[in-house]
Amino acid sequence: MAGLYGARSLREYLSGTWHLRRTITARDGTVLGRVRDAVASFVPMPRRSSPPDAGDDACDDDGARLLYRESGSVDLVAASSPLEFEREYVYAFTGPTSADVSFRVIARSRGRLVRSRSDAVEEAAAGDGDSDGGHFHSLSVSAKTGVGETTEHLCIADLYRASIEIAERDAFTWRWSVVGPAKDYTIESIFARAGTEEEVVDVVAGGGDAAAAAPR
Image (cartoon, rainbow, N blue to C red):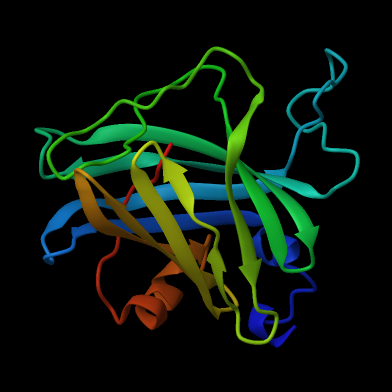
């Protein structure tokens, strides 16, 4: 698939560890926050029910799902010090270049997830269980161009929608638009495959810094 730079599917392209830079920008151009050195990964989804001694490496039977994890710290204009965050989503692949994405509850929360507002930092609910959460969005990417978009996600009164661009074999970019009564900003996340980030970030970002947060 030309748009996936030799990968046979979106699942194959995304699999592995990525370095993440992110920028949250208000509609007027004001930078609200940055993430510079976060780590993200797409790994086979653990089985829903595994033997007690199976460990974290027990993988989903059908191989159709990946567990996305990201963690790091964000510098927000509205906060006096960096805030740590951790987040997980489940990617259930519905075709070679499409997936349904859902929230995943983290069993033990470490730090905070930033849902980000221009005037406040919200603490995201981590929950006590280890079960899958609700549907977030559906993703579809063109096998020819590597460009795709998500369906809309309405979080109370806030509307989230994103586009994705696979620009290199080892780099891709998410761009989220968030609009609501108290929210009007964009989130740009640049992913560079571990071990290649110094080279590919310049290609994607034009040599600039990048960083940001996401909904819950």
